[in-house]
Image (cartoon, rainbow, N blue to C red; front, side, top):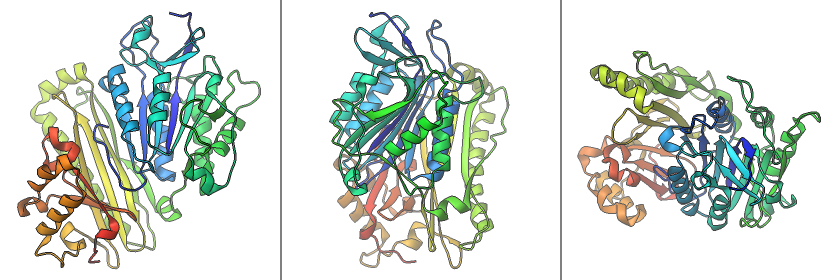
Length: 469
C-alpha cells in the first residue's frame, strides 16, 4: 500500500532507498520530498515546503503506524536524477504487503496541450521540459509496483483528468484489493504556499484531520472528505480526490491505522540541542522519545538511557567539528551540512520496549553517513537488555552459531558472505537489535563499510526466535 502526499505549485505554461528495508511482512514507510530552493534563479524559491513536510511527518509518526521514513530535502537529494532513481527503486522493489506514503512539497508545472503534470526538481530549468519530473512516469511506477495500495495527497495544481470516481466496500475487501488513489489541493490552478514561516492551507487541513481523528482505521476516502470540509466555499482552491487512471487501481483503499493508545499516551518527542559554533551551518533535526510517568515502567530509568544515547551521538558530532573547525565553517557554507536524528518505537507493551534511533548526516565528505542505534528494555523489573540477554540460543553451541544460522537462512544471497565476516564473537557486543510482533531485526549496519551498508539489516521472523525474558 503506497500513499503519496505531494505538494506542488503549478504555473500553467504553453507547450514547450539509500538503504532499503526489506521486510518479510507488511512495511509502512514514508518517503518525503521537500524542495524550497532551486538552482535556476528564474524559479521562485518557496518558504514552507520543509516546514509543511515535517509537520505531516510528525503527526503521522506520532499517531499512526509507520515503520520508517526517508526525508529528501537537501540539494543533492532533490535532483531529477536522484528522485527518479530513488522512487523507481523504492516502488519497483517494494513487496506486495508494503504500504508507502510519499510526501512531495515543491514547485510543479502543467502543460495543457499535453495534459501532463511535472515536478520541478532542485536542478530543473524553468524553460527546459527535459529537466522536469514527468508525473506520467511516476504513475507508470505505480502500475508496475508490487505494493498493494497507492494513494497520493497533492497540495498542488493537479489535473482532474487523473481521477476516476471514488468507491466503497467493506474493510477487508478494501484492504485486500490494489488501489492507486489521490487527493489534490485544487485543479489546474496556482495554490497557496502560505505566509513565510507558516504552513500552507492544505497542509493545515491535512494535519487537522490526522490530528483529530479517533477512528482506528481511517479510510483514504473518508480522510479526503474530511480534508475537503476544512475549506470554506469562498476559497479559490478546491480540493478533490479519487483513484488514479491507468495506474493499477483495482478498487482497494489506503487506511491510516492509529497506534495503540499505550504508545501515544506515554511517549512524547523532544528535541536535543546540538550547541556547536554557530558559524558552522548545519540543518539539524534531533528527535528522541521522552516517556512520561506511567504504570508500566519507571520512566526516569528509561529516559536516562535514551538521553545518554542521544547525547553520545551529539558528542561525536561536537568532537568532529571541533577538531576540524576551520574546515567545517568554510565547507558548511558551500556543501549544506545536515544532521537528521529520529526514532521509531518498534514495541511497547507490558513486557518490553524496543526503540530504534536513526542518524543521517553529511559533513562534506564523499557521501552521507547513515547509522542505526537501538535500545531495548524488559520490565518487571525495568532493565536494559542486550542481544545476549534476550535470545535463547540453547539449541546451538553458542550465540555465534545461532547468528550464523540466521544469516544463512534470512540474508539476501549477495549479503551472506559479508555478514558472516561480522558474526565473530568480537563483533557481537556491537550488534544492535529491535523487534516487533512480526520481525526480529539485527543491525550490522554500523560495522560495515559504506559500500556494504545496504546489507546491514537482517530481518528474522519473530516466530523463529526464542526469547529468554
